[in-house]
Image (cartoon, rainbow, N blue to C red; front, side, top):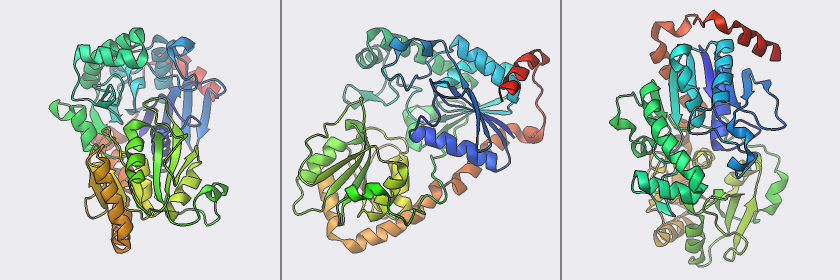
Length: 432
């Protein structure tokens, strides 16, 4: 099959979604598919390259030229509406690659929608967050879980988040484009059942297939050579949190819960500072170790030395890869009963679920696992088995099946693109 991925960011810009798209693209290429990817160009990056068999096109947009629109110049997001320059660039990429499937992952899909009928491709949209309903993508209103969208409510919330001018534009555009998405997408692929429900996908007519994020099949095969960062860890056993230092990840709740434990092993917190709902980490409770910006290899080795993992999210966390990685290394989890975590953690089997934001319940769950090594061992082994469902060998074939069902007998057919685009095809090919 000929597949074109659309994602606003791609490595070396890195995050959970970026790792997922790269892994999916390279796995599909390794399985014999022709895979190209379009992403937004950022300064210092090549406009074209080949990454493990995937043809990467970095395209320029009009909005990305306006520095004032972005608080972080290293993350120039796709706008929630068709960007004229991105539309033209995507038209050239489609003419060059002739995809049968276009698989989008975020708001860059909006700049493909005007081309959808012309392209002849089937459109798959993986829904990683709550962007079909929420202009902030997190379904957080103020500083708490949102009860549901409303036009003026969203205007106020987005205005407080982005600034009133940008917030109003994002809210209006996202509301209009969501209707266009629902009409144009051939299959929605939410990463958890909670994401589907939160975005009200089951209420529409478009087919929905819940397929989670995944990790490499060998994610648990960590290097036997200790990473230099491990010297920063406590010498003995510890509990481990990995993620953004944000209130939506429940880090503030976790530190308060931990402070109430007596004679507990250290709590290690590995992650990165975020501008969204930041948690102060400069003065943590005693015995809390804060470690910032670790490489992934070091994080995986830290999991193997931990007692159990902690994922106390207070938002509807879609499908956190860090939870999968912990389970793959045989760590039981204490997680919030919210979002995609309920798909991942089986209460009393692979870990413990607690109400989000309930520091007393979280403290009791930590104490229970600390007091019962046999229970930790049983849950850890069950978590390792459960993690197989979230590995590439289990997930990628499910995505291939979605493509095959959409294409039917066309799966191996040659797709004809109008000859008028031959010049664009030659231009892109010469860039290769």
